[in-house]
Image 1 (cartoon, helix red, strand yellow):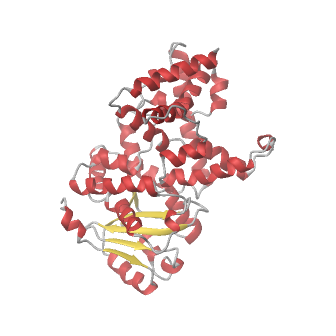
Image 2: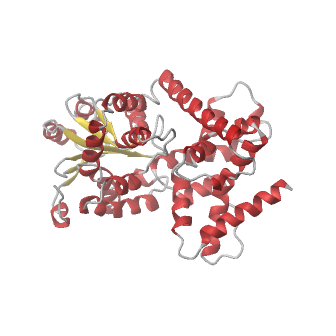
Image 3: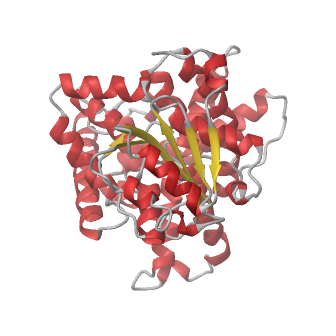
Length: 403
């Protein structure tokens, strides 16, 4: 059922701080079969503090649990019971950071989860893709629902990506804007997006694969063996695609020859530049081109606005400018470490310390999919031909580097 705007305006949005009220709300939620769940925080993850948990019912009622003000909501307030229940399906978009924060900070292990980002990946793989870019919440809504309800929340999601500064979710009391964004995150998922993905998965016979992938993503920051297994699987796929490019493609091929929704393009984005260098000079050049795309895209977009001279952005500034979603916010914090810690011999230290690994991972994870997808959307939107300017500038820059 698609609800009208005035109906949605009348639906409840309640902030829960008191333990006794939380217990009462949990007793209500325990009667539901499906709930949409999301978490907010500051660089949310294993150590990044969770400050808010949102739950939405199938009828559209939203509860915002202020766990920054009262950490006992999980234990004494019985929130843990709902999140660990095998009887209630929790619909979440991109749950690894939420799962990590819940487990490491509150001792909560998510159970019975439907991850909408994982669902999209499994469905794309079923259609023949080997490497799938992770969709942000806005992209997910655009892909799986065109109903009025989700369209309304897509507008709120636009606010989300422009307003989530580093300390946004630590502010108290919760502002109207914070409440609007928080409720939009969960209301956007059910029932339309969830029901459509669920139906396609069932019709395609992908239930078992989907369950395995969701279990993997829940444990990603909890179980080292799970993380190693996932990394190995992706590493093998990326290298198979890169080897295929190396063997079958003409060495005059440039990065822009690959469609941006292709496995080849995705593999070039994901392969480490050091591994690319080892593969061949051809692959090394393609990898360099894929990195330059992000830098040149910013310059072209700024020139389109009327700037004559554009300063090159460092990675932290690039993230701040083109993405403020949860994933990139987490890596922006790691990037801050990068610029304060990279003294002359920093990368010569062995064995690699946790800080070095954190910074190294942040360097690459910060770029995709959010920063890249935002720039791509702006460049290809193009009423005035600056996608052509962009391609031309890449060619010119590569010619300079070659010489």
